[in-house]
Image 1: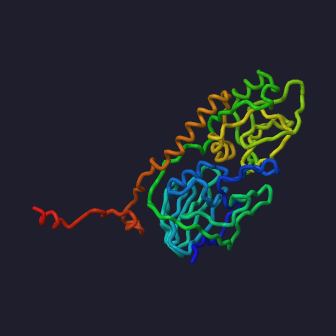
Image 2: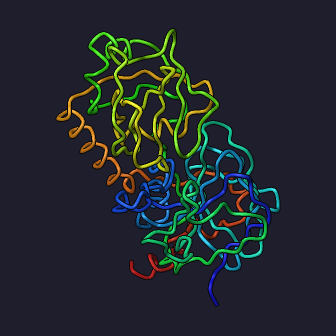
Image 3: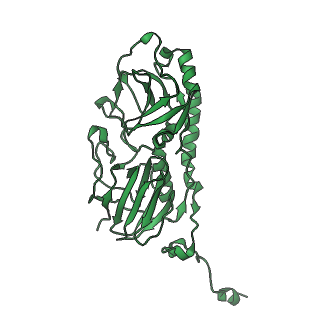
Length: 341
């Protein structure tokens, strides 16, 4: 019998997400996928999965979940309160065993914006255009609701009760960007000012884009020039008519006519995705060669994530799954040593 995940109660921002779809820009469909792609890599490291394995993305609030068979899970991204039915509190950024029939309740975010629930074998819902992720802006898939049941894939098994120190990305920070086709149209003074002022994340933000409010006046093209609509992608920084920048996110449109003052490096996009309203950002313009090197280093860091796993330390008195720790592996009664003397 197949393993299923039952969602008894769903927060308003739950959806199935993976790394998204590539190759559909010509048809007007952006990549989509998880808002915080790094969280998928962290979950994959904790469970020994491929990073493309689909998980549950929880925007702001989780829900109540149950599995029909004992299942390994991992929790990554924005930390949320996670509690089993018997009151056991689960550590975030860690892997655990979720027993069959035991409800897991995940509450509101404590920091950041998007939390992720990963399950052994991954969500095995039907592939649509080569991916399982819901692209909410285009109507491909939908948010998860109370009573939804999702099939899980076959889990090859592996360790649980492991933890992974996450990359810091929940409180804003510095964003590195490369020039866009319209950067020069803003003029040297505007581009320099863009790197000098502080920006705060506005409450207007979703999977399509994040609005950033600058200190002082907004930004404008020299001479009030306009640009033609052209291809855009996640990370692009569009400046609207009132001079306010928007960083485009995973479900952004595929074409647009607002000028782009730059484009945020993919390795810095998790900071944009996870920032809560009021978080502060600063921008730094880097060359294309610098950006390539930074992305190369970021990719190497992703590949090293499994090597950073560490055992999850807990109070033995509160460990209902004590045997899964293999605390006595290799221990003998000592008689074997006596017999060998």
